[in-house]
Image (tube, rainbow, N blue to C red; front, side):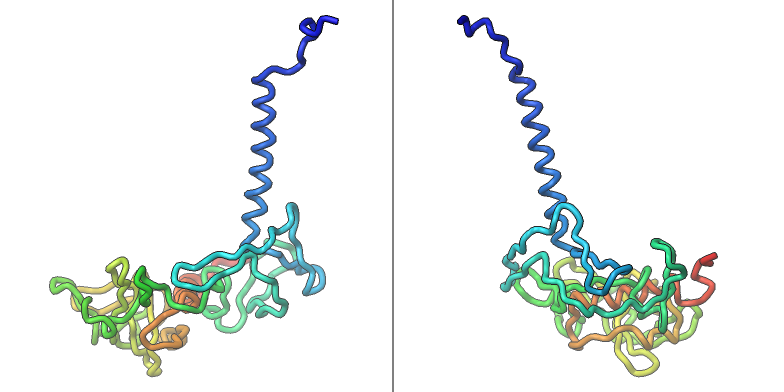
Length: 256
């Protein structure tokens, strides 16, 4: 038998394209599985409280990562039942319809006021020091002489009412910019407002359009007077984000 006369049904190009498709399919499967390290498993609200949804492909096995400043973190994290109930009610039983916050809408944690459960530890510099601190904690930073200094000046809400007095500025020691303004609210509490929500006038007066003057009193506080954790940052910023929609009834769009 003349084997040289037998036609081989495949050529190199065809083999190469099939290898590429198998590789590409495997890559999609791998990436889709890896992206389930955060946010999974999902909870099925129409079933029992402990009904979990993984979908296809299933969640990957936990992987442990070394953190830059010591310690480890494993993801995906172990799911624990009994998470805080959403402080909102549904406008209808259909999925995707709006939800309305209950209680204080600025603290409900929904819509523009939602926050992530980040680590309850301060963000750190490369040297392992707290990244964001007030000026009183680091004398190497200050306000440039040609810029207005808001310390000691009033801070006003969107209604023009005084919400408190500025007592300090919080600086990002890695980026060399101010991140927060610290104020003493009218009820005596010391709280922060993100600098991105502030407009500082030439005389140092600060105006915040996101919330009303009286609403500064309820801004989430800090556990440490000279440090802010990643979780606290999310909650503080979420409060003012919620104010852009819920500070006054006329800011919220109609649901019907």
